[in-house]
Length: 178
Image 1 (cartoon, helix red, strand yellow):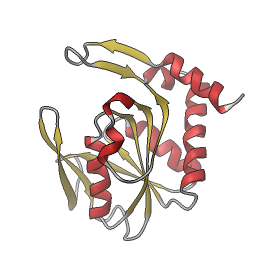
Image 2 (cartoon, one colour; image 1 turned 120 degrees about the horizontal axis):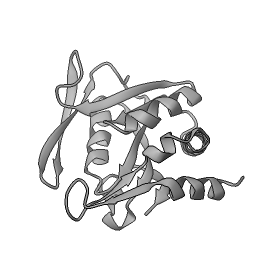
Image 3 (cartoon, rainbow, N blue to C red; image 1 turned 90 degrees about the vertical axis):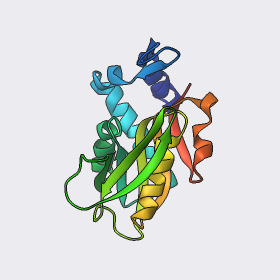
Image 4 (cartoon, helix red, strand yellow; image 1 turned 90 degrees about the horizontal axis):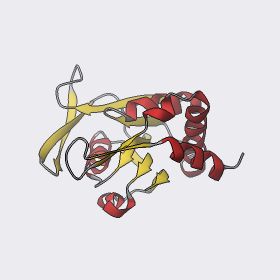
């Protein structure tokens, strides 16, 4: 089966919930992909292939809270490398490095443990969805603050009309564009 066919099958099961979590938002639900072992295997394989093609010597996969935690460890395991979570403030033990970022309705803070990324390591950042780009941009800043090298941003779904990838300067890849 071709990559395009695998992507089409994945896209076909992504659910849409209008006006969730608030009016005017169409929530894109990736959980049906997780319930189908074949589709999940295809999704992870497609992400791994892209990462190998674009950053063949990647050192670390970083996943963003919370749905980046679903795909990041699976991709890291297939690549034989480590996984680092980036979480909201106050959810990680030990000494953490922080970055504040702006949301549509206020600000938030991302954290990672200070020793989670070694200086100079090549990092790929994974999340489920790229919308306005605020969280991905903050993650890139946090990786750089930890002295890592953010090399690629990978998402399962990109809402292209929102132009989120314009908020960061490193290359990005989205499996499904809506």
